Length: 358
Length: 259
Image (tube, one colour):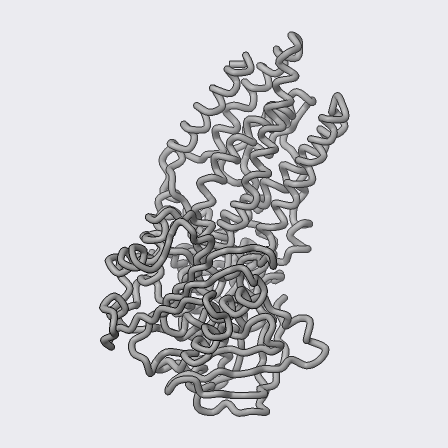
């Protein structure tokens, strides 16, 4: 089960008006566990108003920098990012899980490959880690980075990228696409759309020689780029996506629990929501799980192991009280937020409302 | 990846749109609940089938008529567990307890040879129904491995396009080795087909396994397929897949004089 470690904040640098770069140091005993791969991310947790919030931020350091750094861009209404931008200071400690994610490919020191990277806004963070590591560890490889932002002042890591260009002369090509600022070359102004991709391929990128492409940014931008890459002959295993977790569901509400009814036996009125449809049925409190009851009422609820191990059948209790017999798969915070393994879930109250859609 | 991050207002798009247009999801943190359920279900069906397939095929090692065949059977038994583990590692990212998972079911358990197993998954063990039937001899094992191996190749080729990128990557790594398992089956079948008595046994086994492997492609009309297609977890419908496999199998068997 995932575990959190305490990291010390050793540096905070303001990168743009609304983004900071935070350097972190694990305790000596945890050094091995935080040995990341370029392109991975860290998941942090912190209590806000008595509720635990988890947020993931990509590591922006290269493998050879000897430190852990994450870039955190402040988002309107984002509790964690606002706090990190305004209140976090050197010497504070942050709780984080060990690095996760698969947004990388194996490097080979003797390979001479041509990489192509597309980043939109703060999507630059994992791509920067990859750029730095590739340039340092594959001396024969080149990297072309196309980086979309609204305007110059919102470009994260602008100076660092310029420095990299100079450090690895001729091996890093950097193209800034700015939405609202006119540049010398028309092609570099506006948004990345199908037409702009065509022009990039015609003038700047030799698709035939691209070995691997990395894309991180908003969903529509990634789709446009991936479509275009495929049209120019790249296969799926040459295109790596990293998606913002912006679509992640919001904070879990505290579960509503009606304490009044707690009859040990009898029947329970169950309401189950699946794919936006809610079905009501009665079930006996005889040791039958809510999952089995839903299935026997012709609902196509997701499940696999039925042993509390795999977590396929995870659902959320919206109302009522249930008891979970076995839980090897859900973490404490998920349970606190009202999630259950429906295969292990026996109704306690006389009414239970459960949803597979949350 | 950055939580909370959006570049520009007009850059937001519903996840359903994103997936239906070929977008990929990349980590447990950005999959919605229903997608999570379907994805875990797909992955566990694969894991259970590989574990059950390997456990059932282990017997074939001792039926093998020669060293070459013994090595082939051992390799298939070993690598199928390795493939299960790779997908189980992805499931672990969602919370699955890997160590307990292995103990959750008796992977070598089989139904009687003449039973009829409902192709819909039964109970908590998500293996494909074909893996509930027992193998009975070397020839039988070779036939089953060739036919199901070919089905697996067709199914994995489609699954490589899955919208869950880490799974697509694992399947692309696994596919060449599963293809090799199928080829080992065909090579074994080629040797069997040269012997007149064994050839008849092989024909009997083909008659037994063909409809059971065909069932692994799922029902012709499937509401689940449509849902999975919208999530980018499936691409070609069951009947098209089954038809392509059947044509492929028929051609290969005809080439061996076993049609």
